[in-house]
Length: 341
Image 1 (tube, rainbow, N blue to C red):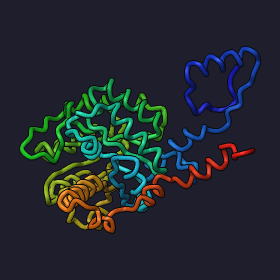
Image 2: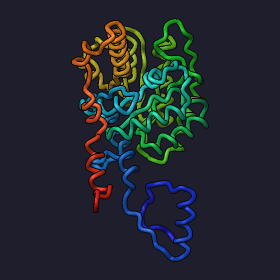
Image 3: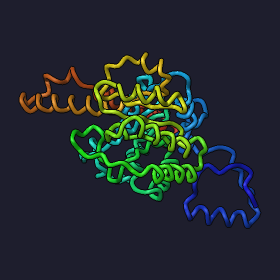
Image 4: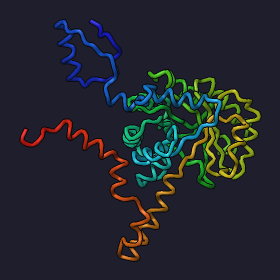
């Protein structure tokens, strides 16, 4: 006997067994709405719109959109509170806050755990820096399922070899994947996704590898044809000459995402005029927090006191506010029995 509504939550094996017994006994299950945890993870609760849909709307918007790097639950919360409509879950930043190199030293399951905390902490969509997909097509398509389970809105995958080399490292070889193989990886990811609005952003590394604009165009064409929602064109030059040449030749065939970490002085109006879809501020929260912690800990070590730093750091009450301790107090009043009751 079929249920009368779409089941939004996966049941444990024990619950599935119990549900099966109930159905055999003639019980008719009514499932009319997602459970609260699924609602929180997959939807912008205020609007009821899926986070994946909101990210897709941003990628396809005629306006230049911006998303902010985060690497933890609290940094995601701060980015949303500042007004950003989306989050970039940076691979470099997540690896750094775990104390490892950005060379796939953190496993994809460890990254998933970080993402779960991030997505639970904010209501805006998250586009994750998924490196190469952590292996071949099979690893990549399994990753997509697990990202969807956690309500992540999209994955950016780059056409390099696993394990990846960070694009901004100087003097390192940047070997690229075969175009056809990477296009088929994108197709495998698209074929695997269950949410039609889940976004796959194909990150083209041809300019990083020094292979030129023509190669970048060839790869971008192939990846868009394979089903990518958008193309992320990357460059590490301090002047965006390569990016401008690419955009001129690209002729707005599909949405383009930029990461102006090295060419940050370029005015945003340039990218609006070029019809760029999205700009990612890719690693600035982690860099700010590292510098702040270095200066703070050095000062405390030198002065053997916190008197000189207390006015420069967040209060403990601010930490309670950011982590929504007030909601817990309300919940305790509602769900815990009153003394003497």
